[in-house]
Structure formats: structure tokens, C-alpha cells
Length: 154
Image 1 (cartoon, rainbow, N blue to C red):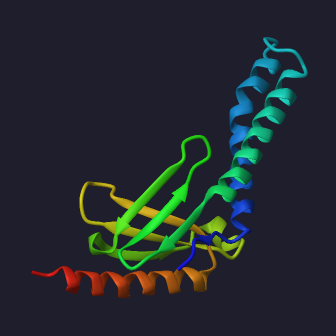
Image 2: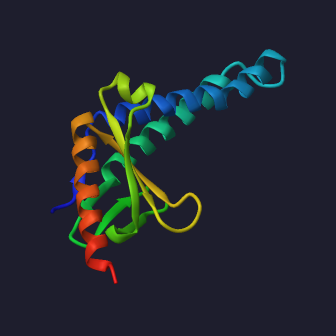
């Protein structure tokens, strides 16, 4: 299987998060202006800079995110500043969920969460899938994990 990309609508989710983060992070500057500690233009500039950085990060994040299922493992490639390549051996998969949060439901997307054996918090999330795509991925990973576990049995 070749590397799979996320659905383009995931950019909407990530840009909305960037807008929210910019508003929250710019609020103290607005408060400082309100109290007379910052010039009138400071909240606007802070918000604009934070928003621009967030939107650029969201778009670069989309371009960098991919996943691939091979016979032995699930491979994830992601990250903007720090590029992360993750390999999840199929034999280590414990269970797989598909998940849809409120924002994802709003734009018609879902995520697939793969839980692995090992340390606490050893799970990976593949965002930006269509609901059918998340279900198909969940079923495919389940099938491959069962097959890999049978081959690995002693």
C-alpha cells in the first residue's frame, strides 16, 4: 500500500484550532491594553501574528502527515518543526477505535486510534479520515493484527 494522505477537510479543523489558540493567547495583550499597559495596536498585532503562525503550522502539518499500512506494520509520518516517524508493528496492536469529536463531526471527519501493547499511553491517532475511511482502516488493522498475532504465536 502506498502512503495515504489525510482528507483535506482536516485543515479546517486545524485552522479553527489555530484561530481559537490565537484568540486565547492574544487575550492577555488585550487585557494589558485595556489596563493601559500596552498600546492600542498591540492586541491586533499579537492576534494577527499568532493567527498567521497557527494557520501556516496547520497547512504545513497537513502537507507532512501521511500513513502507510504494510504487511508488518503501520507507519506514520508527521510533524512540522520536529518530524516524527512512527512504526507500529501489527503484532503489538491491542485494539483499534474510530472516534468522532464534535468538531470532526461538524466537518464530516473521524479519527482512528490504534492502541498498542507496551508503555502507558502507547497509542497513535490518525486524524482527518472520512467516517467510512476510519471504519475501513479500523477493520483492516484489526484483520491484519489478528493475522500477525497468529503468525507470531509460539
